[in-house]
Length: 212
Image (cartoon, rainbow, N blue to C red):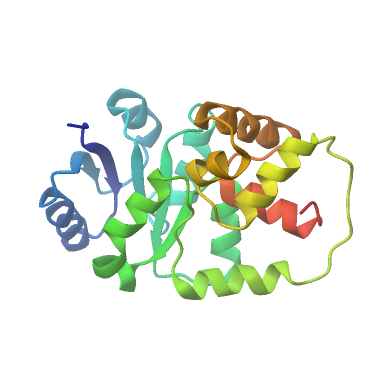
């Protein structure tokens, strides 16, 4: 039997924070490691509690969720971070993505999308509310010049192409007839060469700069 997925919640609205905790506690696949009303101590809490998934509100008191996200990414690039917000504007979405968010879920969809989004992000996906996905697609359709040669190998280009098509790491492994560990190694090298820290950021940069 597999261990439950450890989750940290950062949400300043007490009612919503309690609702999230109760919703996830009903599912034996998850365990709530902690829930907090602000994220000023987020870095220390992540180091201490070692979650697999973080649910992070953007609009938090004293320190924004995006600031906390940047802080966490300085020492942990593997924890999956889903931003929870009422905002669906370009500024917040892309600021969060470039800071290293793995997903972006509008609060109005939480009750119906949250557990699905957690499973998706744990399987290598990038969960987003429909309006967010549409906004990103529209932004990526704007023509931008190719900036530089990142010296990706042919296999890394194939991996990036499949990633951009929405495939999970397991699906990429099956498509390329390679192991999951080899896929992770390719992804690690792609992140390093593109100088990005998340799947969303890698795909966004690849499409923007016509690498795929």
